[in-house]
Length: 303
Length: 251
Ligand SMILES: Cc1cc2nc3c(=O)[nH]c(=O)nc-3n(C[C@H](O)[C@H](O)[C@H](O)COP(=O)(O)OP(=O)(O)OC[C@H]3O[C@@H](n4cnc5c(N)ncnc54)[C@H](O)[C@@H]3O)c2cc1C
Ligand SMILES: Cc1cc2nc3c(=O)[nH]c(=O)nc-3n(C[C@H](O)[C@H](O)[C@H](O)COP(=O)(O)O)c2cc1C
Ligand code: FES
Image (cartoon, rainbow over all chains, first blue to last red; front, side, top):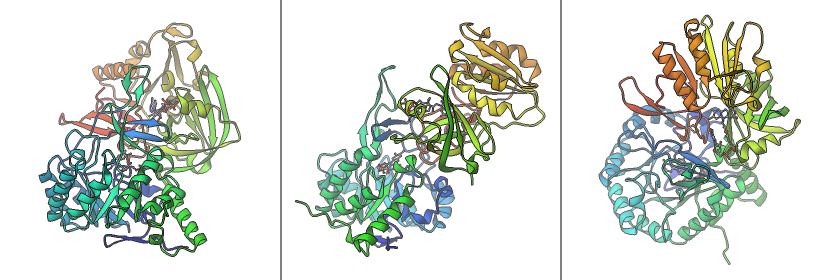
């Protein structure tokens, strides 16, 4: 069996597959299906400085080959995460990534301070959540603001720092360059694309927040294109995600330039997806005589 | 094992009333784990999201699922033939908490009737009240009708059974029962909860919400509750429910 391990920003992952933030909670529920060490890592549910209740329901709607969601960052707050969730997570034999979102730059800095004192393996800066009024995406949509928030958190963060980008921008490669210049160790992308569904009987949006974030197979080609563009623009590694649902997608995303991957929505369809995708990548590598996942990263030969 | 996603063999999938299907699926590993009020999350071929359907009945080898065709997913489900296999994640959620020596009243409205079948089978002499819009939607009467079950049938328009709402029957039974379990449309659940509250009768209700993972990881299936100290919180229908103490729920 091929060696699936990868290294991103000095952190060793047993597999390139990481559970995407917000789709996997803090790991307990999916540990009923497989050992969490099957995954290279877990990006935990987005946490904020204080507990957040999130948006009123409905928070999800189905779309052709995808879903839109507007959970609104419901989470128990950073202190609860550190005390109650992290100790168990750290025993699971997988890399633990804390995904943080703030209302203000100070909140991001305070969370980075607190998490730097823990044994979290990486911090993922969520500046791309489309579902909260303040916090998140307003930091993620201009090069200046991305540079400023990344630079500030960098000063407070002793852990490898991943900046998670929003696809809802004009030129994602420019944004990625700003994050790199401000000290990001890696980029993760893409967060959800904003979307909307309307119930034609009631004339109401299906989601109570009116709009939500699109994920799942529907966004896959957009994500591949964006990862490829960013890979051509920066020198730090990319954790690629958006619509991966089978091993072929995983290999394709690696080829576009991702060093590791996150998967989310596909587990709602099939909770065993990570196990199947790992097996598929491994067989592909054996068949092609590929020794290391890093050989696949960026191996596309564009016309 | 608490729950698992596995293949089930379809034993039967037949229309039992206008647009309502009765599906029996076989899998020995999972069926025996099912408790009343829990649900199954069904993978519909071609759809990203699974469909949550209550467990209507269960034995050592089979689950029974009774569902109404609403949109594309349940439409596809209704076309699945006996002998085919489907992927089901079950049993999920917290079901009804049923004590041995209490007198229960089980109330189902419309497509909320199916989960009351397995629940009512757990007790000795249950009162069961079933309500439907009209005679074409009436289901499961023969299944409830057994020894010691006091069964009531109401329709909104009186085309079958008594022309009444389920709460009209409940009112007459209040002084005979210790606890109520109910599932159905929100206005019905609200009326039942209010009546139980006023009469100091505990009431468990089963709720619906749109779901993603079905197991408590994605937090999309939020339900607003009022905590004892008066503060608002969101819990999750798939893991904390679908059955809740009616006093907690903010309608
Ligand atoms: C815990 C629980 C138990 C249920 N038990 C039953 C049952 O025993 N029998 C039955 O007929 N129905 C039941 N339902 C409702 C059933 O899940 C929906 O009618 C069904 O999902 C509709 O799918 P669709 O593809 O036909 O409709 P669409 O409208 O095409 O579905 C689109 C999306 O919205 C979701 N959705 C639409 N309506 C509902 C709803 N009312 N509740 C939750 N999600 C919804 C679907 O799951 C899907 O993800 C239950 C729902 C829940 C939450
Ligand atoms: C229900 C849900 C909740 C999410 N919550 C978060 C979150 O808290 N923080 C975050 O950075 N991304 C969040 N995301 C985005 C995912 O991490 C991921 O970027 C996106 O879903 C694309 O990947 P996928 O198509 O494999 O799901 C969420 C996605 C979903 C579906
Ligand atoms: S459906 Fe994912 S938490 Fe309930």
